[in-house]
Length: 565
Ligand SMILES: [Zn+2]
Image (cartoon, rainbow, N blue to C red; front, side, top):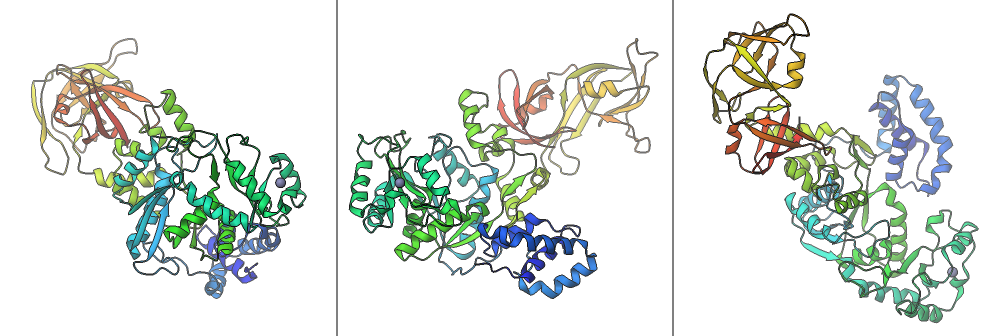
């Protein structure tokens, strides 16, 4: 079903070129065509033509591209004119009747990437009215993709933290008997069969587009073998249940897919109560029908899975939910692997599921990223059919706006003690915020201070300023001799524009501080005694360092987690 006329391809290519400095990217145009219904198997067919079109479009001047696009604009779905954070309409959505679900596989907590599906689905249900469902996709997993028992709770916790309350919660692992009932109907009617070929044998048959001999066994025999699958005496690799699609289908992935398999792995919730498990496609077909799913947001990469589900629904005569495709969201510099994370959490290399390196919602919360920021970030990116890579700073700058008013303190990394000769005893009150009146911190200072080693190292002969306190002169006869510092004056002179550094009085009871960074490193230093007033969970800014959140007030040191610059 190639719907793509030449004009449609050209229109998308022009659209893409106009928003990317005049150059259309083949991947973007392809993604747009997928959203128009292009199937993967059709790619090779349209590729030569698409390349020709791209070549032509990319050689056009911007004015030509624009006028040509205006001519063809109505051939494609309207250009996006929505404001940031406004979601496009869902096709065929009826008021108060939209049912959408999120389907996390419980291998760890939700991370920033998964939060997108949670937020978009729940926002859509909020927009139209209906039911938002949390459906744990926990059939059995695989050796590579294992269920992590603690993640059920962590996932719910993350969703709730985002301010979202699912109306209903289901677990696939509770529903095996439901799937069996539908499976038996299809086996008895000959739509599915039990296959005893080894994976290798079946692979060979599949590649040759031949039918597997098991396909022709009478339904009663298939059904008897299906019963055998439940007996412990049947080895786990002996049988699988296959959907009778077509072994000649152009896409090998569609050919008689496995719908049920045996697994004797211990399930964290149901232990060894079951050993026959449905495939993701089979279970979703049944569940979406039973819960009444109206719309499914899917990644482009799941098109095959949709095709299989549609096929099974066709057999039962059920209506297909509407698939809305969504490109992949990547955040620049953020690498997330849940299964890798699990290993590091178990081995103790990571401090727990809230370790910042996991980018879990728990870790973002502990770092001081606000739930509202994440929501705003996801909605700002919206729903896009093409894959997008977003700089991390987009998230950080949204969060920074929410932390603007927090108090500011001094933190000295690698403190270096200096003496500023001639400094009188000074009583200073420094506002906790330059613009907001949220209080002061007070010091009585002498002649000795701590400054950061990196600042100390940069000091050459000249004049400098200790922030909010005094101006001093630095002199060093030669590098072999110590630097000599002497007091000049107190007043800040904007005209002089002296290099500034933050400091702490050396005679005060400063607090040892450890800051846990987003990459797992720990930065150590000292902070001012005024920090004692803070409570765990408070967010502050360390001048010239960045925003941090107080994680723990330990006896020997305070532990902060780094938010961002
Ligand atoms: Zn077979």
